[in-house]
Image (tube, rainbow, N blue to C red):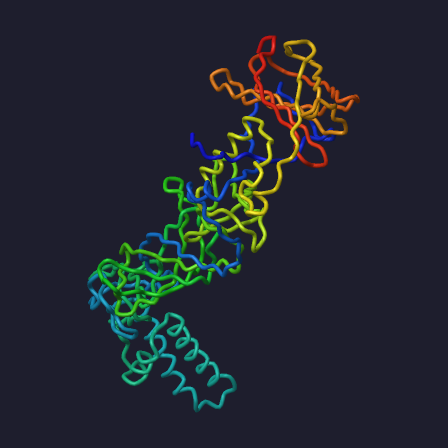
Length: 493
């Protein structure tokens, strides 16, 4: 312990309207260590490294870093199938991930049904020409109807117009029909083989356009509330140092991976030069905007496990602990949800040491004001000290016991004159005993002025044992006397 004047704590006196703590329930409760304001001298603040800051509003944006994988954009995937049964003859697109352009031939197919339909179409056209000069009502129109119906059947089978025109020109059915690619892209799946029998349900090719891809980022569930569709994202790949790909969040998938506790976030990315390959591992940087938020430095927040505390600076070394609610951490700052206002002065360093000092003062039940001049200006330091009083404390029974007790205080001035009209309180404190499952016990009683300097009140002790007793007397809101002592209360635990 330093020989310098030590900080003391000050706090409001107990009042008769405040509920008395019940120590009988404490062994079954988890009680946080009580805290009281702390008064520090400038020298003490400097020695423990206290630094002050200000609560302020700031426009926040944050980066969430995650890993991800490249996948095919399902909206750019097409299947190649035929609408009639037949036998595949020649196959031109014969390799997976072969690039094909729209209209490029994929394979040829022979279909007996297609050949028969073409022959019906040619016969209907020939009959239309023959019957067109007939003078009998309905004959010419019936022949034309048959020709149109045969042509429509070919169109419904998705026969290209060029093949129908060739059929009209040559007058011969096409036995090996060439099927062209309906889209441009890469073949990701191929089932078309020479001499294979294909039906309308057979999926012959899967063609994917890779000019735009999806990236699935694995975002931890703790961060998922900070992202939303439309937010921008940047992708980096170890294969291309210094290269950045830009995109945005398209959708947040509604499922959490039970093994990794992550949520898949789908990003839509342009893929210039096809640098991003399906299955590739990438690094994702999600840009999130939190708007204008009230923030405090992260170093200012003391987290005890069940609560978050900061220390308000009231000036002249007076520091008050206050419980707050914090939101996400953004860089070196915490978002404040409640408990603080803008422009309040707070401690931003040495919070752990101040918290320890506050707990020690609370445990000792010390409600002593700062020594005259401590933490104040030179004019305050030179102010005369308040007059001191003497305290004579007794209990009935003596010593006190577990259960109800009567507390008496004789309050006299330095000259022995009785002091009346004071506020006198008595606090009993017993430290926690974890081995016995007992939390710290703290009970207080406010004594009533009986006249002639005598003050009396009653209180209940729920356990026997050694208590640290603090008696405090105030008059005109000024502490005039304090006394601390140890008493052994009779009775069991």
